[in-house]
Image 1 (cartoon, rainbow, N blue to C red):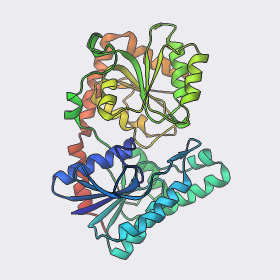
Image 2 (cartoon, one colour):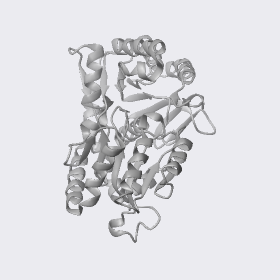
Image 3 (cartoon, rainbow, N blue to C red):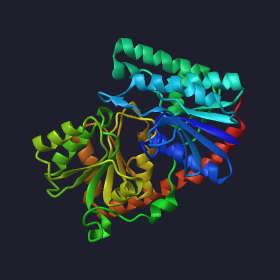
Image 4 (cartoon, helix red, strand yellow):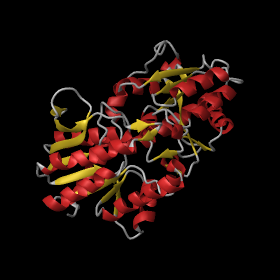
Length: 388
């Protein structure tokens, strides 16, 4: 099959759950003899079209800021959607798989699908629904919601990355809609080969040098400020507590300021974005991963933590799909989005070594369900059922 993936952000130049998903599935498809193309923003130097890890990458427009004032840039999404039409029309594909957010490229793919008689599948990483009002306010939020509903109505073939996302998509499309669930995955073999990483990791018991780790974009929805408040509370019982924050974004300066105000500057380490192996090494060198996001379509870093044998504390939030991946009290905790609640969950794991080891074992066992090869097999079956 000749398959086109469409998403403006491209791994490894941009790192996130959707980017990694496309990269991993594209590599697997290529290794099985399929001709894989990815249409995204040109993040790289040189030619617009390049070969990368046996895939053909098409840079449809020059690199632009994905985020403005902490929010996804609407002009960037519009430019990408407009520039996408011509290069996508130049070739004939057996199937086009478009990642839905940020929506506008879906209309381009739908047009090309109609004109070229090419089946298209819409992959939903998130469904926002009435969250649009929180994100953009009443007037602009209504427009965002209408666009999301329109995309849901024009898509015939849908894949959701979680049951959580499927349920929200059904609320837009109707419960009679056929929506496949194909989760994100992990490369267990690769992760097993990576050693705990960080200053002093080799000398620390079990390679653990961080008590807590967070990994993700430093944007408001991630609520890293609440995690920092939890660290300040945990410091009372664990004076030497060490929290590693992996990632970057518009909130970083404010978060660094907060650590100084709360007296935990020496307890919170900001590491910035990390290459994948370095990230996994740091997760392996941690005892607990905290994911306090208000909004997650899946929460890939959570499964990566499980694959490292690291329990997770996440939060009860209406738009946080990650809470559906954690079995409370077994492989982590699901708590309210409050500093004291997060501190309580983390503290229970840190203070009891036997409890921690049982949780770590349960976490790893769950990760085995999300091996990329299993996801790939499901994907191929789903592709065979796609309609024009």
